[in-house]
Structures are given as structure tokens and as C-alpha cells.
Amino acid sequence: MATLKEGDKAPDFTAKDQNGKTVSLADYKGKRVILYFYPKDNTPGCTAEACSFRDNYESMLSKGFEVIGVSTDDEKSHKKFETKYSLPFTLIADADKSIVEAYGVWVEKNMYGKKYMGTARTTFIINAEGIIEKIINKVDTKNSSQQVIDLLQ
Image (cartoon, rainbow, N blue to C red; front, side):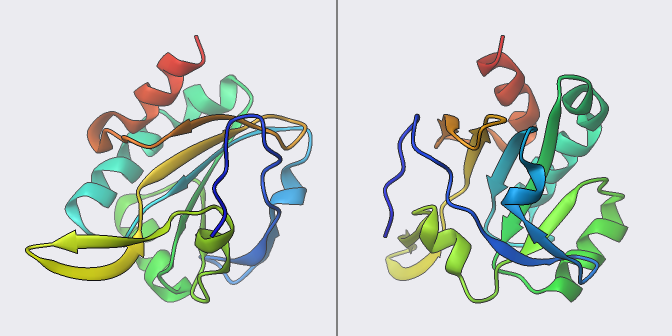
């Protein structure tokens, strides 16, 4: 599992989005990217996080950012999530877990004494050259977009 640090090159990936379109990180070369990993579509924390990015999406775009959400849910699940909450950004389906593994966010979790593998909620801010500028490990789901904005002031 990769342990990425600020200053590292962001691993490239190619996967399908919620519309079945193939998307690569390389497609965003020259743009700053907010790449956020979340555990599951339509769960309370993940919905709050996605809606925070949705509500501040125009502000993110005006600062030169693209927002991309990644979870291990499939395209159909992402499409329902996007439609239900009017999400204006790309959601990547990482069903084979290659992206979460490349970014080191597929981790052992522990809930109520049960250990299982899952996605660690993490946000990567990637600059126009594809270098990781900032990593947010302690994501505040309701204020996730503000967290990003505060870091970039």
C-alpha cells in the first residue's frame, strides 16, 4: 500500500465515472484537483461531504479547482447518488479498489470491535503539475469544502 506525502506525484488512474465515461487523472493536467475519497454513496457522512462540495462547487471552480469524488461503489450507485443530491462533479467508480490502494486509503477499520477493510475518508489537493499539495486525513464531513478553502488561503 502506498503511503503518499505532500510533495509526491499523485498516482495516475483511469476508471469509469457515474456516466460510464472513462476518466483519467491525466485528463486534468494543468488544473488543480480536489480528489476526495469517501467510504460509501448515500450514507450520512458521505452525503454531508458531497453536499458540502456541491454547495461550494462554483467557488471551487472560480479558484481553478476541479472536484472528483472516489469510492468503491459502482457506476450505477454513483449515478443514483449524483441524481438524488444534484452533484455537479465527477464521481469515480473504483470497484476493483486499484485507486484507493494506489493512494493508500484502503485500510483496516474497526467498528464495534469488528475489523474490516474500507476506505479512509481522505482529501488530496493536487496541483496543476500533478503533485500532491495537501492531504487532509481528518475530514470534517459537513465542512469539507471549507476545510480545503481554509488550507489554500
